[in-house]
Image (cartoon, rainbow, N blue to C red):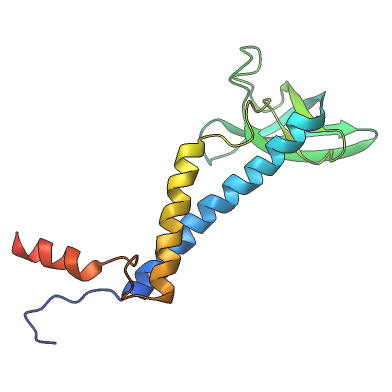
Length: 156
């Protein structure tokens, strides 16, 4: 490689980075779908005490609640569906929805569907498969083509 040619990242390294980031997103979606499934199947309600506001954003709070004498903790976005609990702060009470069969699974709002944002999840699954394909076979037909992108950038 001569000095005037720009260096490019290995397609496998790019594939690994993309696969890890998208995999983390998909893991969160699977966990959310699992929670939604149990809440949609056998949700019950109880009152929870909000313990603190979390820095993760989107109105996420930490809370504690008691079911049959056992205390559980959870974190969730505040309930935007019910104006009484949409702005709940630390020390205040809010309704918590928990699974009767799995009482440690809970949320401060009732999910409407099993998978929120299904089109986005499908696009991410497609991109994840391309990333894995790039890791396995960097010169394959479905692999990320970084050299072509680099050539187009250099031409401009």
